[in-house]
Amino acid sequence: EDKELFGMESFKIMVDLSEGVFHDLKNILATISGLAQLSLIKDVDDDVKTNLINIVKATLSFKDALDRYYNFTQGYNEEEKKPYDIQSIILKTVDMVRFKLDILNSLGNEIQLNFLLNSYSRILCNEYELRQSLLNIIMNAIESMEDKSGTLSLKLYDLGNKVYIEIKDTGVGISPENMERLFKVEFTTKAKGTGLGLKIAKRSIEKNGGDIEVCSKLGEGTRFLISFPIYHENLMD
Ligand code: ADP
Ligand code: MG
Image (cartoon, rainbow, N blue to C red):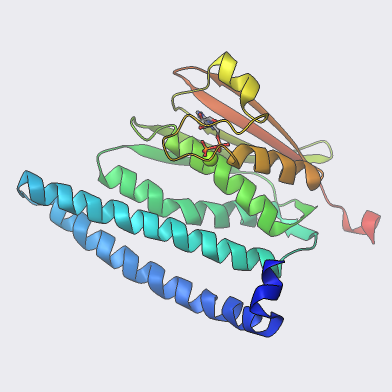
């Protein structure tokens, strides 16, 4: 196992350190990206503009790499299932994609974010796994609107003894042929895609007692509906 390569103690120190370093690096990146975006608004030559756009994109890749590392260390901390407030997991996940939304919007897109979070229910889950699953589904939604403008809507509500998370985009949509392969094989339509995201998301959601459904219309958008049984303290303890 990877963990044994490092030795438990040094791994724990790394986990603690990474928390602070992660936030420092993120702030520095935001400054670099912000300055480049500010200069982009100015009337600059085309070659300067290209360089500035590449700087903004590089900070985004850097941020993605940081997130992967951060999630890895967080995953180590949270292996077990606990009752978690689903609304706060959604908000934390959204914080992680705001950076990407801001950059796309500063490069000329108009992607809006709509919230309707109507539940404070808790579910019994592994927070890391759920956050990773939601992150991928939300990132896919944003990526589906990368070359056009649109709206990302997030809804959270209780119905019966379940809590539902709806993630809806007005992106490119998924064709019926691709829909069949969505969760089955390592399927991707992206140049740099891995095709692993949805497969892992589905497995994690089901492992945590949840369900995932998707419907889509080519050219109109896609809706993912995820549900989990609501955790009732007195029933479980
Ligand atoms: P990746 O994002 O690396 O391509 P995923 O497993 O996350 O892998 O997604 C697989 C494919 O499913 C994507 O390449 C894309 O074609 C399609 N897809 C997933 N979510 C959406 C969405 N919200 N809108 C349009 N297509 C989507
Ligand atoms: Mg993906």
